[in-house]
Structures are given as structure tokens and as C-alpha cells.
Length: 123
Image 1 (cartoon, rainbow, N blue to C red):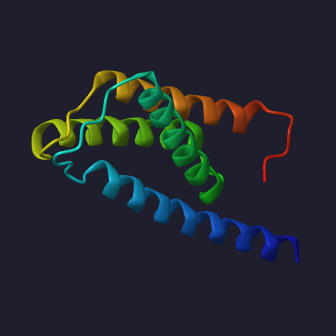
Image 2: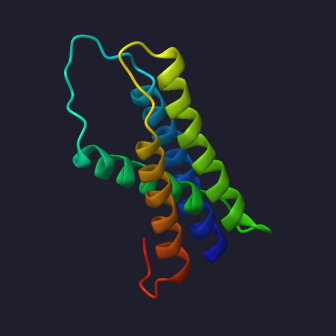
């Protein structure tokens, strides 16, 4: 019975992780026209939390495997950098920002540290 509960929980996180990734990608790659969005530190906080949850959901969605921590972190950091690159090169009205990529990375690392080293049971 515990395996059934664990598998159901993992399936839930897999669906959330895929849906969240698709949503985040779509929002990030949607052109922005005639909207002035001032770049501020608040934008970096948003990036931090978007990628915090992206890593959190994927880490909870995947079963344990060798080097899971490093692989998941690396993929999400690369994903954040690729999104910024695509915004700069291909998406009208969007610009890539190194500081956005750094905020994405910081959010991912923070989520990973919380998941790996926190004594608090999260979900």
C-alpha cells in the first residue's frame, strides 16, 4: 500500500511538473507588444520563484536515481538560459537578460537546497 500512495503522489507531481513547464515556457516565449514593463528587482524575484517551483516540481516528480540532484539542477539551469537566449533572438518585444538567468539559477539552487537539506517535511 505505501508504494501505491508513493506512486500516486509521484504521478501527481509528474503532471504538475509537465503542466507547469509548458505554462512557463509558453509565457516566457509569448511576444509582448505595446506593453511597457519596467525592469526592476521585482522582476528578478518573480524569476527566482518561477524557477524555484520548476525545480521543486521536477525533483518531486522524478524517482530517485544516480546523480538526480546534479542532473535535475543542470537541466533546469540550462532551460532558464535557453529561454533567455530564445527571448533575445527570436521573440519580438522580449529581451534576454543575464540577471534573469542568474535569478532563475538562484531560485533553482535554493529549492534544491531546501529539498535536500531541510528537516521540514515538504508536501
